[in-house]
Image (cartoon, rainbow, N blue to C red; front, side, top):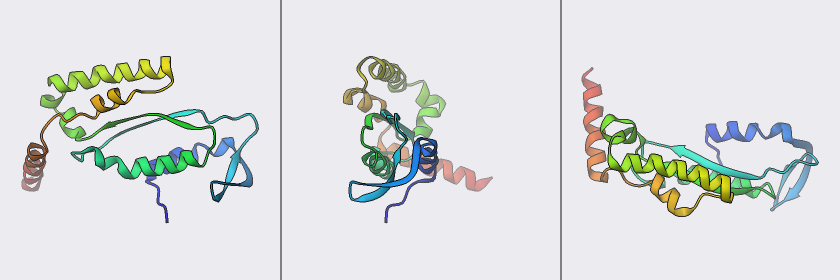
Amino acid sequence: ANTVPGILKNIIDRFLPTLNFSLEYNNGRYMHGFKPGFNPGSFVLISSCNYWGIDGFDLIVKSFQELLNNYPGSKLAGSLFRPHSSIFRSGAGFNSIGAQEIIEASKVAARELFKKGEIFTRTEKTISKELISEKEFVRLINFYDKQMDKK
């Protein structure tokens, strides 16, 4: 059975006003069709998490692709993922050269989406880039966790 993360379920629920109550058979399953004249268009998936690597987004990507597969005419125009976001938000991470590059790439992504209708892979990769080694990330998170246990 497919499951959907709660936040994605909220996004799906926002589609409800655009759907007919009647069911249509599409891609091997029944689903509600869109009301006449509604075109779902393009979507951008934006997410952050505190896992170190990009694979922390696999479940939401799979769920979102399933959603889009159900709606002909929709397309994924880009995915912006920020792994190990706690490092990015911290003073040291935010002020790093890598973080500034990510901020600039976010602006580029907006321009690409506006002008070309999609976000280029190289821009997505820059936004998702490593700010800290996996080993250092685990060390910092575990250190922080131990400090919290002392409080």
